[in-house]
Length: 259
Image (cartoon, rainbow, N blue to C red; front, side, top):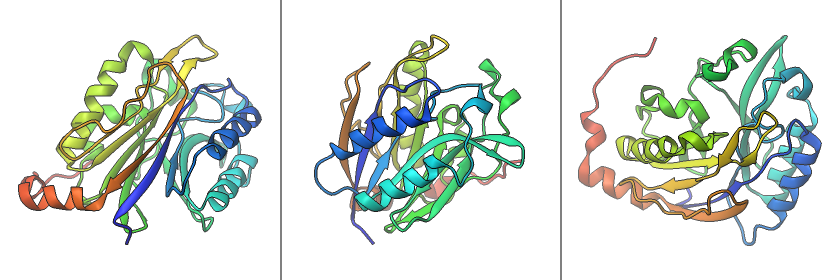
């Protein structure tokens, strides 16, 4: 078990509906990370931007981006996580992939479709929460709009890290800031949000505000709004354990089930 987890957050602009260019862009950004790391986090739909033109950008699990993620993970000896458009059994998914250096892939299909822009009309929703065990850390990966639904993120598994990959627009970025902090506090876990910047192909603007919060809701990063930037942060297992043992807030959770 690793007592520390070194995480690289890549806040970037995305080339609209162009997987090849986005892969090349992120290859260069990953190369620029100095020192050893354990985990690299990319935004939601990092190959295309948040598009409803699924047929134009969709790939399969045998496609070039999945292979690229496996190559990047192996070359950097670090897991890599981000979401992209996947076609499977004639359905489209906004699918997060957590790819380990060994090549092992864990998938999470976005649970909450963003109905404000009709995401549910294009993409099939997931129904399974995923907890990943990686280097002795329990990680819960979620996607963008999932952030608004605390019941889905509720920490009944005693996970250590909650991750949101996102294309969260500028007009509602204060909600992003507030909810990331709240998820960290209520779940007594690190909470990481990686958001994009720039303007997409349907003129939605994104200001970033990528961040890491600790168990107490303290912000540990300071990303510059609207700018492409990579930051590396070290998470400490003892921080999670110490405050959970001292405060024991998770012991007082209500018991209920999700339908």
